[in-house]
Length: 211
Ligand SMILES: Nc1ncnc2c1ncn2[C@@H]1O[C@H](COP(=O)(O)OP(=O)(O)OP(=O)(O)O)[C@@H](O)[C@H]1O
Ligand SMILES: O=C(O)c1ccc[n+]([C@@H]2O[C@H](COP(=O)([O-])O)[C@@H](O)[C@H]2O)c1
Image (tube, rainbow, N blue to C red; front, side):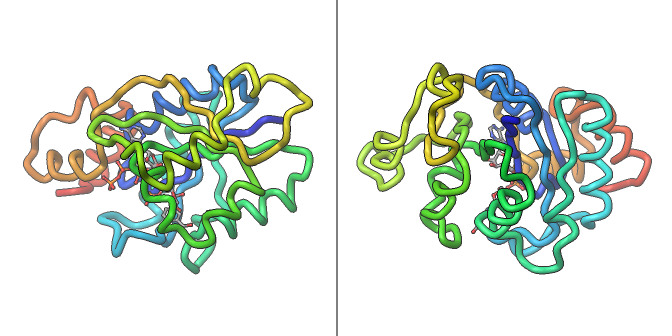
């Protein structure tokens, strides 16, 4: 199967995660998208709410969208969630699958800072989503990597193509939302109606999170 993976800290999960991931699934003709919350994120010092609550909010989203499934490999790991380590384990466990690691432009630009980032291309493809406020410098290392590895959506649908190492730029919805912004709004009791799935809003309200 062709599996998209959206890894994140999801503190909390929001429509800027959900809607682009649905676009990726549709455009790259994926069978499933796995939402993969981490317990210990590599590049964030702390999270505002516990792994338990972040996981519960992702589980609720999975219940509402048949396109999504929970991947709990990183939330159950009590060491830092390096993506290369995770993808190595997943490709060993599921050698039959073709993995597409989904990321926003902010993550893609910072990829050279990731642990053994070059190895990711021998484990999976990247599905790249634009993100408002984030643009790539045309002369950067990642711009060169994109030129070298870019593939078209048609390529993605060809079964003879290699199972890893390509970058697919997906024409996903531009959604100007971040978890940081949502946390601030919640602290200020400002409106988050258009930013969160109703199940996430209800959960946050019920447990009085981010106050
Ligand atoms: N609005 C968005 N549009 C496209 N991609 C996004 C958007 N928000 C998050 N992503 C992507 O989702 C993944 C997980 O993001 P993360 O959980 O860190 O959310 P975030 O909103 O960036 O959080 P924070 O504000 O706390 O840094 C990353 O690959 C990120 O690029
Ligand atoms: O492997 C790394 O070094 C690495 C560094 C930063 C982020 N990641 C992964 O990228 C995904 C998005 O991360 P974040 O911090 O934006 O929530 C999540 O799955 C992280 O584990 C991975």
